[in-house]
Length: 166
Image (cartoon, rainbow, N blue to C red; front, side, top):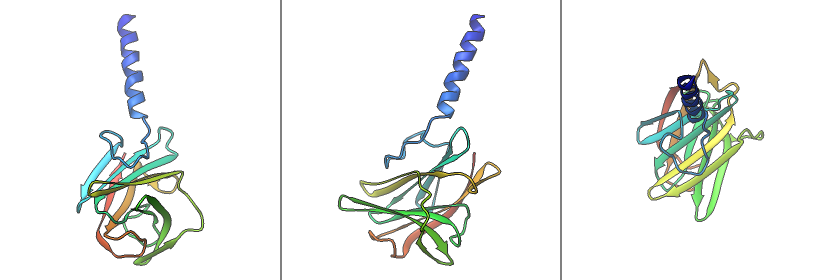
């Protein structure tokens, strides 16, 4: 009986750690996300809520300009994106949709949570949004980019795509 109680306690602790929710604070904490990957000097991270309804995403790049993350495709066209930057003490976060090789601001807002921060030489954006239509077969396709300026229209300095599985 004692061994069963200890096993149950360990199982509950493991489940609690697995179900932990990412915190949108502009800091990409160790073990905060289920998956983290870096390519082309851009780090992205992703987690799925325990009930599978909320997708938590983060993007971090070495820039004092804008960062963006898009979900649902590995191409910009028709992809939902969040683009953000910090100018002085003002955070700017826009929800956009890719159109060919461009993008425009969405009328409909999907983000449940969003936070952008600059620390040192890095800008980090963390968001939460509905997973429906974005997570397919327990994976998510992402695009990420960054630019050198604090605006939503300057060209990117770096970009890449990812496919993360949960």
